[in-house]
Amino acid sequence: MENQLNFDVVFKAKVIEIIEQKNIVREDGSVSIQQKIRLKGINGDWKDKEVIFDGTEFDVLSGGEYSLGDKVLVNRIIDTNGKEDFYIIGFSRAGYISMTLKTSASRNTSPNSRWKSRVRV
Image (cartoon, rainbow, N blue to C red; front, side, top):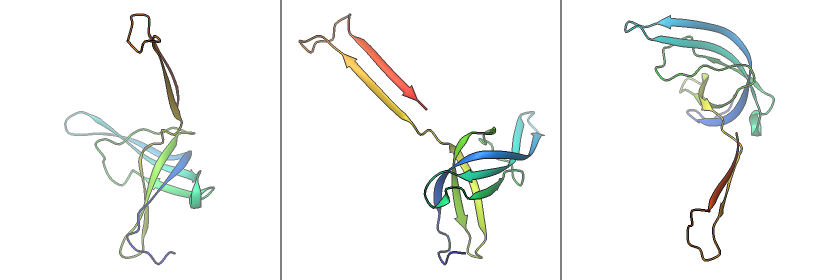
């Protein structure tokens, strides 16, 4: 275990197993999806390391539902007792966005100008 307590780390991981999933109906009738998930790191010091996110221990209002193969951002937190916890903080949106603006030679925007975009996520 590392000597740095309360040291937060964020890394990318892939969902490799949904260990458990519960649908909880709240008092207001809304449904909360809670999941316990096995993740495999895909970058840096966490590459190929497996960790568990246990979202069944608490109700999160804005928690997402994750599927096998999803790429996510994971926050690792070590508390003052040295206990290590992992939390999914959202989907990893790695990729690129490129955009090309085609305008007239005079730099004026004309009705014939076109926006082209390419997005890979």
